[in-house]
Image (cartoon, rainbow, N blue to C red; front, side):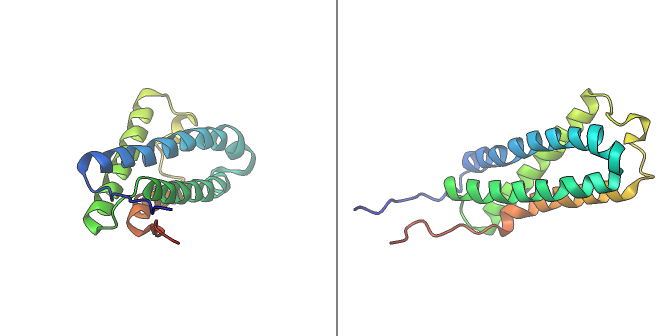
Length: 146
């Protein structure tokens, strides 16, 4: 049996493709879970507890997708490559969220932009920052094991 040879992705186009493969599904999941949080959970249990339910789901999905993409696309472990992937993915996520907030009316009424309810905002931002950090700290299993 011949061992498979994997080429580590460190090209700009490979990192850009990986960043989109990482950010787009997480953004879609965030839209779906965010709608459930705002429309169903928050009126029942409050914004803080609804956010505390959503955040671990998003963090877990982000980590699992990050591992899968880094392994499947053989992303180089070089710090510059990983930092580029992290920066691009987080920038894409923030840009998509900003576009969505610009295009769609707020789901929760006029309090959407109000920072009086600060805790859910901080929890959401922390989850997004973890999303951005994961490509830098994510391991890549050895590909040529016997």
